[in-house]
Image (cartoon, rainbow, N blue to C red; front, side):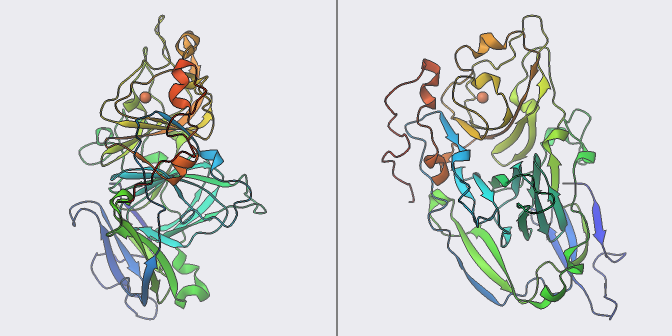
Length: 430
Ligand SMILES: [Fe+2]
């Protein structure tokens, strides 16, 4: 994010002495991308950032194993069936269940009621969408108070933890439901939205005013007795794991003191939040293609959102999409709220994911095209991830596949497809 921010105590000149009231030096850390040639920030620590006193394996097991979408099928995955009210003690980091993934991006889902361990993703940026509930996220850059509809973009290697607002808390609304998009790359606004120096342009559907940086105070001021306590940080990183898991492994570091010991930072690399309500949709006289709904992008994938909006106003317009073969992509739509006009009659509802793989033409369910004529407004809210490489099904995706969506354009079938839930699909871990 190429917008400068500064927080806390920093020296007037970079790479110069910065001391506390007792004369002790703070330790400067440069956190930067692309080998010192892209965005970076300078953070000033009380302790030595590289000081660790222990390291052990974080066992990820088969949790990231995937199996191919084969035979190739459009699918309906019911995310709300993944967690029940009895699932307690779940945190928003280790409790994530993998729905879909490939070598570029992993999509997982969690309903969390417990504080997560301190965590950082050493593989890529994360974009976490808050479907429901509230949470505080404490990061080395400061804190965020998140609410329904927030995206939180967290740069690679940012130490942080998730604290869901739970029943009994003053601001409790409902349990935290988080849709987690983990990249093997960076996640940023689309380049076409940006000026040559990184300002969001007039045609972009959001602008800098809509992006929230971390709020103060930095936690270094509030750590108190914990400050010198050894603290564990869970790190997801590249390793020699199975290829189907993208070679991802985990390590738990022990720091001799609290890792959130930053007294100040400045620069252009930091986490930020954006609420989907602040996305100003672009509409047209006839149907607008998905790129007008784009919000972020990573390497080999994009994130789009479909928000409540006026629809096409040509006197003969058809507001729902035409049938389309997006031949280079798998399209993953997560239905968050409202009525999704094009999917009526398919069984898809709130909490559903549709998987429309490359190689399969898709479009409205029978009758939806005709019903949409004359409609002026779509009350729908959905988050879409389109990937250029095919996605495979994770454990969670396999568990909540409804097994019949593929036949929804022919009115359904009574016999389950070969790869319905509970069938003998083999997990691919090699
Ligand atoms: Fe589509």
